Image (cartoon, rainbow, N blue to C red; front, side, top):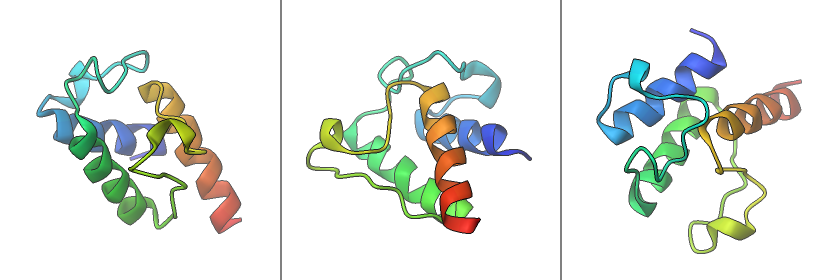
Length: 86
């Protein structure tokens, strides 16, 4: 499974959807993921990829982690993986 597929699987699980129902242009809001679901998704991403996500649950908009769409999350995870694992 590549990074994109793994991120989509995590997000789909939080949204209680099939991965095939999660599109790159979707926002988490489109998928019905609330702030708690977002935090749980971030934790799952950190565990799955062994990375530290720069995310402040108290102020998501101020975080350096782009959560504006599924595509943005995939790009951010890919970037963090390369920075933190060389």
